[in-house]
Length: 159
Image 1 (cartoon, rainbow, N blue to C red):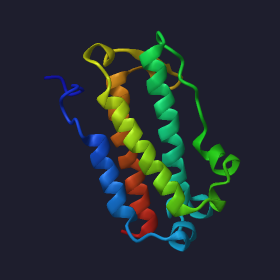
Image 2 (cartoon, helix red, strand yellow):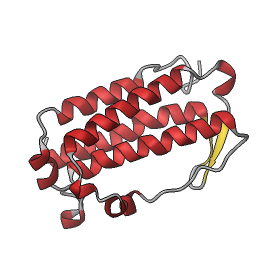
Image 3 (tube, rainbow, N blue to C red):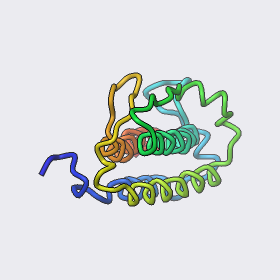
Image 4 (cartoon, rainbow, N blue to C red):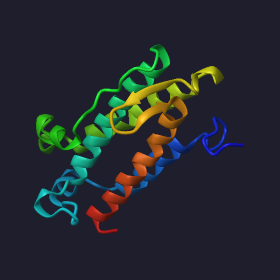
């Protein structure tokens, strides 16, 4: 069985969501905005910034999956995560609301993946940085992206 199999690790997008839920348990607006990623000093993201990014990335990911499923080798739109921090005014957003939005989006993403047919897993889209990405690679991108940011949140919160 290939590592990137449709049946291997079927629940990882849900499991990575659970990891984030555990990390964020008890985090309030003050904590979410007071501490910054120590690796980046004053320019570091806060927990709120990370959660806003996770929400916005989930929306981008859903568009990309939909494009890959309905278009022949579409170009995936690039986006600048750091620019979105300012453009979307992450600092003024409500942490609990953003996390609820992200959680609802993840449930939608899982439902989208559950609806993918055997024939659709090999469909592709073109990413400007990574080149061709299959639908199955998009599936694995979700928990890997979560893991990167779960580690970042742990650093920010001092875990």
